[in-house]
Every structure is written in C-alpha cells, then in structure tokens.
Length: 337
Image: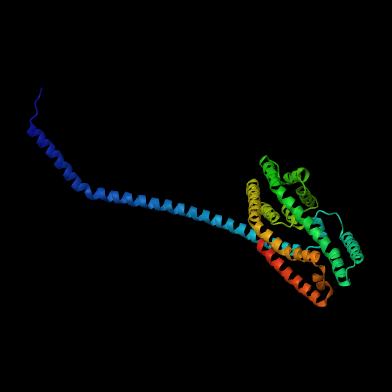
C-alpha cells in the first residue's frame, strides 16, 4: 500500500483552487457578457412571440367585432322592417282580422251578418218598449260592437292556442334538423303533422315558398296572419341564420326555451294580478248590481233616472266616469311580457 502525505494533498488542493480562481477571474467578464447576451436574445424572442400573440389576439378581436357589428346591423335592419310591419298590422283590414280569427267569411259576409244581427236586436228592443234613443244605442252596439268583439275574442283564443303549441313544434323542428333534414323539410313536416293552428300557419309558409318567396320572407309573412312577438323572434332567428350562418338547431332550441319561460312568466304575472283583477271586476259591477237591487225593491225610486232629462244627464256622466275608471284599472292590471 502506498501512503499519501496529507501535506502534499493539501498543497495540490490549494493549487487547484487557486488555478480555478485565477481562471474564473480572467473569464468572469466574458461569462457575464455571454449571460447578458443570451438574456437579451431570450427577451427579444419572447417579445417577438408576445407581439405575434398580441397581433393574433387583436386580429381575432377585430374579426369578432366585425362579425358582431354585422349581426347588429342585420338585427337593426330586421327590427326596422318588423317595426314597419307592426305599424301596418296595427291598422289591419277586416279581411286580415277574419283570417287571424280562423274564419273563412269574407268582409261582405261579415258586414251582412252585422247588419242582420243589429236589425234583429233593434226589432227585439222595439218590441220590448225601449225609448228611441236607447233603441239607437242598442242597435249600434249590436250591429257594430258585438260582431267585432266576437272576432277579437276568436283572434285571441286562436293566438293562445298557437302559443301553447308553438314551442312543441320548434322542438320537432330541432330534432328534425339534428337528424339531418333541411329546414324546408322540417317546415313541411310541421305543416303536415303539426297541431292546429300551428299546422295552418306553417302550411301558409310552405305555400309562400312554392310561389317564389325565400324561407326568411315566408316566415316574416307569418306576422300578417299571426301578429305575435314570438313569431317576430322566430322570423329574426331564421333571417339571421340565413345571412350570418350558425347552428340553427341550437338557435331554435334556445328560442323554444325562451318561449316556454315567457309562458311561465305570463302565468306567474296572471296569478299575481288575479286579486287586482277580481277587485276591478267587483268594483266595476257594483254600481250595476246596486241599481238592479234598487229597481227590484223600489222601482219608483230609480225610474226617475230613466224618465227625467236630468236623470239622463246623470246616467251619461256616470257612464263616462265608469268607462274612464274601467280603462284605468285595466291598464293597471294588464302587463306586457
């Protein structure tokens, strides 16, 4: 075995350390320069990468902004057109009202029925012994008011049935489109297999396409025979999809969910306002009930209102104030959703 002198080992170690220190001292500046250079190069590369990322992000934002602006412009244009159609629909003709009510009668037939009904009620009132002024009023209400009120009642009832069935029809369209059918075939499916009155309205859409109208134009024409906000939503969805593209089945599915939520909200509002409506009905009917009870118990006491000219003025003024009160209460308890 060879022995090693500890002193020799210590001298060798010190010599190595001294040599390393001298080398580090001589090469320190070069090492730091290389480190700074490498760090600067890395920062430049990172800046270039960040700049490229920022530019790509900016381009994406600009593209999204352009797309959003295009959709907004389309929506504004569609809303303007829908607003114009709603203005025209506000002054709908009698023929349109009859179509909205689902009646096949022509305006001339309607006027003939109104005149016959008014004359019949006038004859009945004359036989009952009503005075001439009251006879004219009854004939006017019977010939002009009641038939139009009946048409309005039928229109509202048909619209209510349409709203109850429309979300289900949209769900059928969504499933049809997801299964691979085009939009035209989905519309024809509702027109042939749907429930009334949705079936009739979609049949009109299909017939409009057959005479040369596009799908968005045919859906917009549905507002003529079914002037509802839900139809407006549907036509806007179809028009936006045809212009900007997108997932039509998802859009129709969202529309169906929105329509159901609107229906639930309407039911909730009706439930909350039912107490006020009952109060309005009671307050509005109370004067007539009191007048009837007074007539049954003391007819001579109240007949002066119908026989004296001052009583006629009192009745006319009471009727005006009652009408104003009923209109105010109606506006207070009716809510648009």
